[in-house]
Picture 1 (cartoon, each protein chain N blue to C red):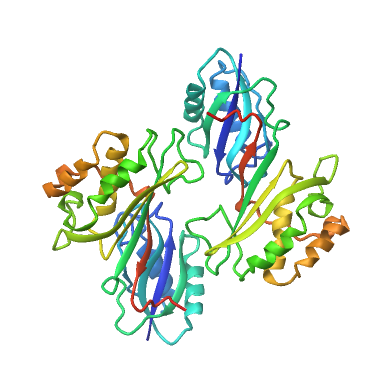
Picture 2 (cartoon, chains in turn purple, yellow; picture 1 turned 180 degrees about the horizontal axis):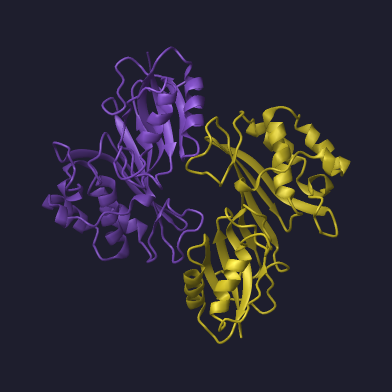
Amino acid sequence: MTRYALLIEYDGRGFVGWQRQVNGLSVQQVLEAAAAKLNGGAPVASIVAGRTDAGVHAAGQAALIELPGELPPPRVREALNFHMKPHAVVAVTAAIAPEGWNPRFSAIWRHYRYCILNRRARPALAAGQVWHVPQPLDAAAMAEGARYLLGRHDFTSFRASSCQAKSPVRTLDRLEVRREGDLVIVEAGARSFLHHQVRNIVGTLKLVGEGGWAPTRVEAALAAADRRAGGPTAPPDGLCFMAVGYEPDPFAG
Amino acid sequence: MTRYALLIEYDGRGFVGWQRQVNGLSVQQVLEAAAAKLNGGAPVASIVAGRTDAGVHAAGQAALIELPGELPPPRVREALNFHMKPHAVVAVTAAIAPEGWNPRFSAIWRHYRYCILNRRARPALAAGQVWHVPQPLDAAAMAEGARYLLGRHDFTSFRASSCQAKSPVRTLDRLEVRREGDLVIVEAGARSFLHHQVRNIVGTLKLVGEGGWAPTRVEAALAAADRRAGGPTAPPDGLCFMAVGYEPDPFAG
């Protein structure tokens, strides 16, 4: 048997999320069904870096699968991509997984990007890949509010009630807000995130951007350690799991 | 009657192109059907800056329509966008058209972008909006080949046989090729383009990028003034009509 590290890209539309669900098609199911074809039809279980929700995209998700024999990684990538057609899921890279590597537990950082299309007209070219906010947002005020969330905090106010993590404490290493024309882009980096943490933060910063919240209210919301003190959950469309970091990097070279 | 200048964005997938055709839905038809709703149901004719082909996208197409009364431009934009739902066409901006303004004949420059996804894996996130070229491309060689096409030339070698322009002579003001990760991006600028000119140039530069053509062969192809000397037509997916310039700019302010 050989363990393969996979770098995976997918468009989250039309999927119930990464994880298998009874109510629809998951990315995991597409990947594992393709992997089973390389395993004589027998089931293959995958492990993933981040179990994204329904509608959330990934440019650099990482996963681990084990297959019989010693197929060269490029052949595994090509075969998986062939079998995953026509679904919007591809393996961008495949590599031999380092000894002991686990895509979830070996991760030292994760990077999410959230894109807001901030103009009157709904999206045409970026439909499904942005959150459409028609009222003007003050990106500088959002960036100011974001600074209160940097560092190690109890993020209970920005955590889904369904979150199963033992501790609500996380260290947010990066939270930047910038405007690029009609887009307002939020970049978030941490070793790990709570369930809905990025979407709840973005939903809160949007209130700041609209002017309804002063930036300092983000600090108060964080201090409250109460989900009701945070803003609403931003929709999944704008969220993309960009990259996950490992040391050593299984995808380097 | 009031003349409105419209800035229009659309995803070319699922359309037979800008212009009305008997064999399917066109962007023009979607726009004019929406405009007719603001004209008591009577037909409205539009004039457009560039009649894009089937599958070609636009971020900044310009069009002119005339409507009764004196509706404020933002109301026209909102009403058009309401009636164009659920099609992937929106009016990003509406403005009162300057006296004598014609989106096609008043244009002083046009800007097209062509995106190639250059990696083994087919696109998932950018499906339908890039040309997938799996073999490695040398973007620097493509940029070198592109330089031979800059300036005023007879572009017969890069012109569709169906092109109806009187003269094959055009002045290419900008033709840049750059790599951004897995993307190879071609930016093309000219006052006007021949039919398929950008796609035929990109199809030719791709041969250079693969190494099959030396960059100097682009110069020879141009000099031949024979369509058979140019490379094949790149697919429409990667092409986007980015912007068109006017003086004065009806969309300024």
